Amino acid sequence: EKGTYPHYMLKEIDEQPAVMRNIITAYQGDSGKIELDQDIREAVKNADRLYIIACGTSFHAGLVGKQLLEGIAKVPTEVHIASEFSYNMPLLSEKPLFIFISQSGETADSRSVLVQVKKLGYPTITLTNVQGSTLSREADHTLLLHAGPEIAVASTKAYTAQIAVLTLLAVDVATTKDLHHDFDVIHELSLVAQAMEVLVDQKELMEHLAHNYFETVRNAFYIGRGIDYYVCMEAALKLKEISYIQAEGFAGGELKHGTIALIEEGTPVIAIATQSHVNGSIRSNLKEVAARGANTCIISMESTAEDDDQIILPEVHEYLTPLVAAVPVQLLAYYAALQRDCDVDKPRNLAKSVTVE
Ligand code: M6R
Picture 1: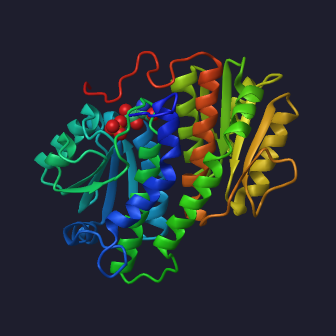
Picture 2: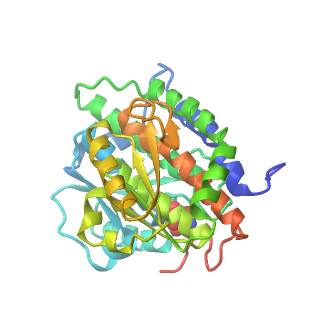
Picture 3: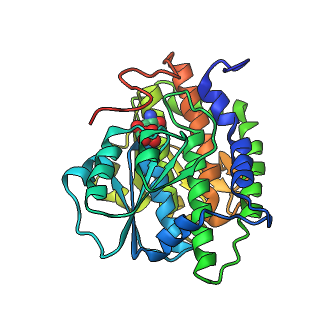
């Protein structure tokens, strides 16, 4: 039920701090530490490479997951769009482990890959929000998202839940492999929940910014580098699917290789700049487009913020910034869609789960 909320999407955005806390509780063992299923641990330990398979928003969560699994757990990880993998299977490693990410657990493109790799005898894990869903039943193991039902077509809390569960997996694998790390995952995810609370309370600011940047435009760009680039892809998908503004997420450094030709007077370009090592370069990309008339906006962290930055995110661990950057971009898409009289929860031509290939 959406209660007093005008739309499920807004309710689901607001639920994200609680979802982070649910995930911690759900995976906390008697020792108070995060404990994943022994079989899942073994499966990851025995693999020489992880293959993440997903579509849409879940694919974008997988891209962030790759950074976590390689950065924290040092496991080589590839991320593939299910429909591409299905028809163009890449060369596989000797001991692959397949991880399917699907909110619904019913996506046909992902299932088609699951069926193929099972035939080849490879081990599989499904990360899903729906216990008993097809992908959960057919995979060897399931990791649940604990996000509660997601009704709006535009995925919000499932995206952040997927990243949070992938974080737990990465840290758990690092611990079992005796890798040295100082990542106190319960503490870090609690900080994320607090930061999300601050951000969901900034609705007036987001409504105002949506009006400023998106009210009448036909296209928009999100730019970022590294992990921020992946969040840009998700930010653009959110904006296009509910507000029908043609939006793209770009790697900051790629702009000058072609896309900058599209910048005109008033084109919105929003930079996500959460990583200190690329802060300078992404800011200079933004200046390049501003000089060509773009209407620029920057989303930065408290530690790297400059005086006139439009959105400043509370500090969290550098690997977890996608979890907090997601909130304002979801709200920007929500208000842009609202201001343009779009059907926020049920955008045209889309279904909540895509059960045909
Ligand atoms: O249920 P799934 O996670 O497998 O769905 C995958 C995509 O269809 C889904 O994320 C879609 O891109 C959303 N509408 C995005 O908001």
